[in-house]
Image (tube, rainbow, N blue to C red; front, top):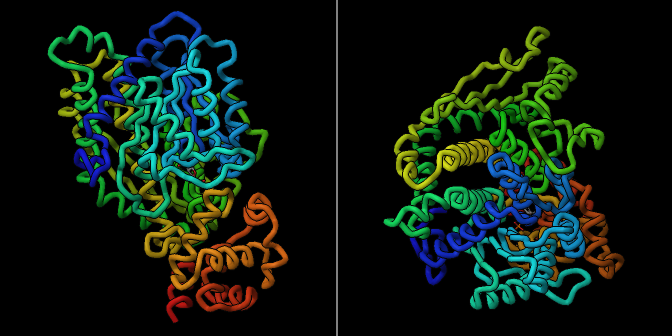
Length: 541
Ligand code: F6P
């Protein structure tokens, strides 16, 4: 994540061109944040990228007067709590959402985030902004070189993401737009961009706006350029990352064991916290269904204070269903209704008041009638103690007091993300959802995931051509041995059919490796409870 300045010929986060680009965007953001005119800063993305857009807008609206920040996320606020993969493919929806939040604004700083440079929703928005540079200043944040941006057709459009990114790259060289796309290295779980990609997204966004918040300090500080300040800020994340893993590894490993025990006993994991840390817990939970084929009940996130604290644009949307109840009181009700047979893990992140100490408490709990107030559930207590004083003093002269506070909060939020991500990822690995670092049990719920699934089938059935792998995927999606019946359906129809189904990719892998019929593949898989063991034994036998 925080690698040296280049990786081969690609630029990494600490490359001077990337740092300069972040600094330039911070200068523009500062002008927006201090201007009295009717302008806006809009952050946008799909899935985790959209949730982190929301989170950043939420944090900075707390410290910048005038509610300057807003966000758009594919699928709307529903996507903050439940994964909405199909709207990611809709570039028109992206444009409409952008028009809606920027109507009546004079100038807009638009930051489109797509970790893999792939989301059509964001591509549509960026392209729209590039057509209207008198109003919009577009910025693309992602972690691929432009020549590796996704080049598959976007439904109902003649452009691909790569076309849009190439256009933006050209305009960036003319100083009209901005491109922040360091290479951050592969994800530990292939394609799980919520992890490293998500973390670096936060680092970049928070650095831009915290620098902007403290621009008055930079301009009065003759000895330091804004690029030097940016580098110093990035180094604080690097240092925090080192401190975090040095202090947290053993506690994390125990928490992963607890959480996986819950899964093995058909129980759940509940992430709870306050403020930004709680938002991280909710985001973490939301990612598990598309990534691991988890159910909406396997991991859920809750925030102390519920919607009043969460501050999303659409407000309280509990009426949408059980999985939109996010308050800690909702959790207490849920636990009460679940009775005694479950062995849930409740991860309660509690921050100590001192910035130097960072405390995490977690436990695997057996419930009883009297244990209905959250704190009394606690059985295992893990303390992760990190001394951030050195980190704090390294930026003390660079930031305003509100900038320092925001920066420390952001470091704590990123540590919360690392905790929640490690536990949910580790627990899913422990129950066999990952094979050779591939998320083999993913949901085939949008175009990107459809194409990714074909790649995964080929990875485990290396003798299959792309066409053959696609045929097996379709046979698995439709539960048929006659691919000709379904081959001519559109990709959209394939996705609609596949989305509610379980074990689509594992079934296709078994069919492809054994060259067997659909029913036989299902029967072979049904002999195993754990997907990794099933595939390891069936595919290699
Ligand atoms: O489609 C699912 C997904 O891969 C999510 O896991 C991810 O957060 C989202 O797409 C957005 O991806 P990107 O940031 O690369 O556009």
